[in-house]
Length: 220
Image (cartoon, rainbow, N blue to C red; front, top):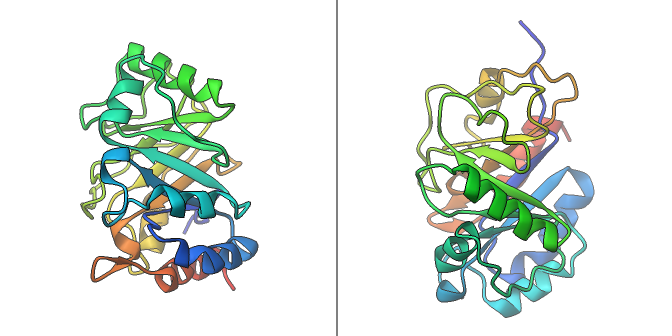
């Protein structure tokens, strides 16, 4: 059996309360983790979307963070606008603008917006291959959109893209099986895996599930 591909880090998306801060910092000290924080000014405080006050506390942890921007704010960014957004403390910006992929104009708009904040932009895709000749942003293969839908196959990760991600129904019960399905020709293992519903228990974000995933992937 071929050696299992190991992700550069794991993105756990959906920490929606500053009460998780201590546990997030402790796990980040032990494992390569990125915390995906869902940002939508129209949904502050509803499940999955932390309030502005909680985000302020999370951003001060000094851990790796990615802002997963949704709603009208994401649509404005994807449309070429440059709305005001407080993104200090985030190292990447994922713009969840829709389920239909991204054209060249959208890629350029997201890349430019991210660069004005000194970070890398991320977009979602769901085709059989990662978009070709679109290296201005990182790409996340996502057919699930937080609904726990597991794809039957994943696109191959090639050296033509600097950094790609895999998502879709991943959790402690199948993370190793998922990694066995990843086809990567990049010897540096430059990909990440993202999970949202797989680390929620009864609809609530659960740090113990995050730890279970990390232990399986990276060991204790």
